[in-house]
Length: 271
Image (cartoon, rainbow, N blue to C red; front, side, top):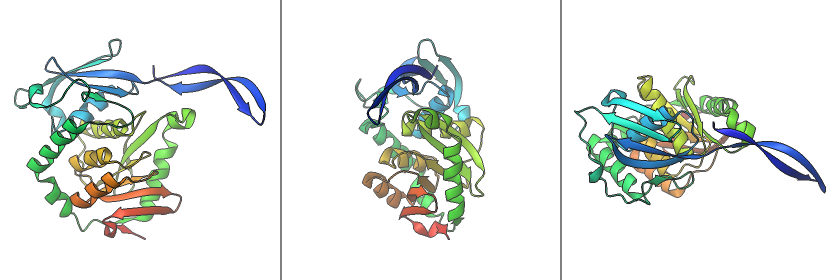
């Protein structure tokens, strides 16, 4: 259950009216790795398998879906149990994280220890060199605008409640490959990344769209997946812009109608 009706009093033009409204439900979800507690994610309790795969990939614990041997989801207990393949070298004790920073909330996203882990994985994989080498990519601006519109039209919880973010992944021809919603903008991104992993679809020649602000957390997830173009209906934040410039990401904000702001590496976008 991820939405419900509530009784409200609507005030409009000096008039009060008793109505019912639809609101989304957020739940704290605990993820366990090899029986050890890893993280508590406050999220929309929907598409939890995709969320788990996407989060574990985004922070660098796994590199592919087949590195997870087994996953069990207990919706009644709000818990996800993940068992990694024996070939995956990971120990929860290696993460310098405390009970407070284990929580991934719907506003600020991941804490510093998680960012540190992601950056170490990026350096190990030499992802910066990979993204900077993709300087021949060119996409028509019309494809970006069309993708943003498609994302908005296919996020029903947002339209119904106004309480969700959406994220989507498209190929360079503008075909929709994955789309998810969540209360947290970063969770929505993890979910579409997880969907791509479960479909065993490559991240080659794709771009990411979001309804949320382009913070460093959001950009880090795109960098981790080596996605060269990120576009949002909302604004870009300075921390996200700095990361996008450094790693060779084309960052686009305020993509609405026929307008957009390109903050970094604009050469990839053509009229």
